Amino acid sequence: MSVLVYTENWDGVFKKLSFELVSYAAKVAKMMGTSVTAVSIGNVSDEELSKLGAYGASKVMKVEGNTSLDNQLYTTILAQVAEAESAKVIVISNNNTGKAIAPRLSVKLKAAVGAGLIKLPTAVEPFTVTKKVFSGKAFANVVLKTEVKILTLAQNSYEVIETGGSAAIQTFAANSGEAKTVVKDVQKQTGKILLNDAEIVVSGGRGLKSADNWGAIEDLAEVLGAATACSRPVSDEGWRPHEEHTGQTGKIIAPNLYFAAGISGAIQHMAGVSSSKCIVAINNDADAPVFESSDYGIIGDALKVLPALTEAIKEAKNK
Amino acid sequence: MKIVVCLGNVPDTTTKVKFGDGTAFDKTGVQWIINPWDELALTRAMELKEDAGNSVSSVTVVTVGGKDAEPTMRKALAIGADDAIRIDAGANDAFAVASQLTEAIKDKEFDVILTGIESSDYNGSMVGGMLAEMLDIPSVSAVSSLNISGDAIELTRDIDGGKEQVSVTAPFVAVVQKGIAKEPRIAAMRGIMMARKKPLAVVSAAEVENLTDFVSFELPQPKSPCKMVDADNVAELVDLLQNEAKVL
Image (cartoon, rainbow over all chains, first blue to last red; front, side, top):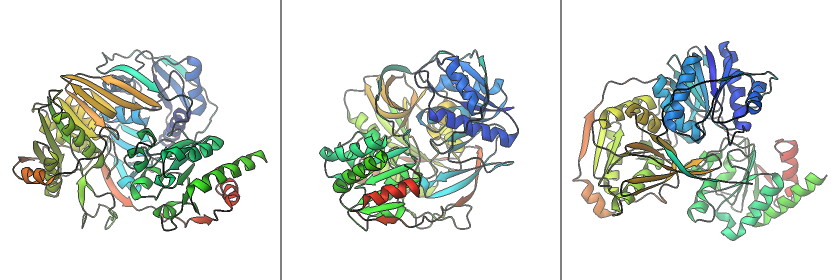
């Protein structure tokens, strides 16, 4: 019996998300009185794999090769490792990769899924999790009834905890078959902070008035080391790429700090950002709904407030 | 090529959700809509069918739900789907829904199954992948573009920090997200008239099980009021973010 955690890598490297998942799995394992085994698929150096030990994995199973995601093949590999380890709980990120694998693995292992969790299970007997429903308008307490359970964790919803342990690395020979999806081309964003990874996000809406005014958003993002985002009308107008759209049908994010500039705060937008730990709204309409869901607000023209804020932050950082 | 689009019937996004005694969603007075992601999937399916450059010949919509899901299915027919299937069962959990869909679809002819990446009610992101595993066919998730040229299928999927162009052989499931179609299509009057004559089959529920029980619901704690800062004093905001919220 163990808790298994799937740690995805990006070109052979882990990121904060991976350590967050291992930390979460370690806590779940503690609740159940067992240990954590991490699984890695692809080509990752032992030095990189051994980092997982510091966050609570006592064992790492590496499955080499298969560097690009094939949903069926990855599911088969994870199922084999889960069976070999007699895993009772499998922790996966709720990112795009997790959403691709977790449902297939659920069927393969007949394991109930607690999807998109933002905190630890509330009980292990019966195994109960709390999840957001109705796009954040409510929470549901869900009992996972099967012997094996899968938990998918929303990004940036659990802390990274260093335990200072070390992990034994083992090679696992999976019998996985052939990939059915063929990756023909990859485009990666380079030199930019990814929206889902960002701890601070600066987001603009129609109040910015035109794509030409985005410098005000980018300047503030730069001094903060933040990612940039936008509301749906902005991506629909083509002012910004759709990857930057945060909201119900766009990206769901949970940064520590979210700036909503010139965004009215429609329920669909707030559904994508309501898990942010702190929300700052800047809007010239004092009645804009965004102020109802924000922690701090400034009534004013975003195009004037943003540059002033950028300067004030520069000044504060120089102190 | 035949496309099947799985549709969820969900409360309108602006619904104030209520849970009666706290154990079940109160459906009283709720306006139902096609789940937003599924609506984009249907829109893309219609665009593909209308494009003469591929072999797409029909679009079938299927849902799992009671009679209150029928207006949503008629709307899908009005948008242009050729026929609709309603599986007469409660949508208890993702595994049960995927099992019902599998039973209804497995013996039919299909090449491409489209599902939205998430439903706006239970937000599980599970049904598409589960369906693919149950049917034992490939799936591609987070699909933001789907092109079919003749019989060749090309997709774009979003990965953390980029995009990948992927090819796959039918039959398969595409779990689609924003980008797959620009804006959801609105039914025209002619479509609404024609929809009345299109077939909407009701099939009885299969014996399936659910793996989860939704035991209770809670509303979030009310948020404390927004603290306002004067636009001429942004330094105060910086101070609050640093020393009160401790996020800078």
